[in-house]
Length: 239
Image 1 (cartoon, helix red, strand yellow):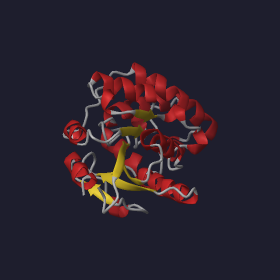
Image 2 (cartoon, helix red, strand yellow):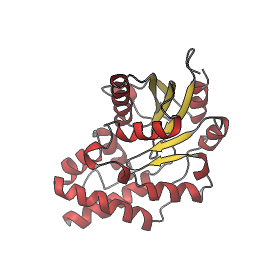
Image 3 (cartoon, one colour):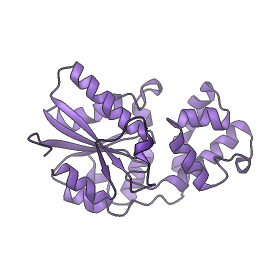
């Protein structure tokens, strides 16, 4: 409950919010960049270390800007890289652990439907969560393939699709939890679209600071709430 209106669903980003995928995504990005450019990843500052990759990932608005600016990849190459991402994700066995406290938070909020909206691969997300016996906690998963390339986050299409599936567009509040500024923008864009359609629904953004300690104050738009640990999400949703 936020104020006098019910919270009808909780929607999560995946990378950096539910699961620490930094090591896996760093390795796959190194492989993809070398595949398309032939450049040794160790010679690229943003790929030479996990810390460097993490800093670069949050410096740029989204992965496309990162790939074009840091790695010199073209728009056409980005489309090919996006399609190859799923293949690399499914074949790579690098561990991607669930953040401590996430499973407990999901249990405490089990009275609400949960979904995922991510730019990672749906197949990879579902396989990873199934291995951790957590897939059944989520009623709907939107991945990279479910949304056209032009309408990925921060466009609200995936978030609105998930919201519709979880709530049937019932009036109320919906939480969207994410660790990147693009998630905050996605929530704002969803609210604009909902208002334009006359829907009595408000999406509030929760910034997940427990993964990498993101500096939300440095972003163009700050989240409505900040969670220093997953249990903070429970407290926010129950207000």
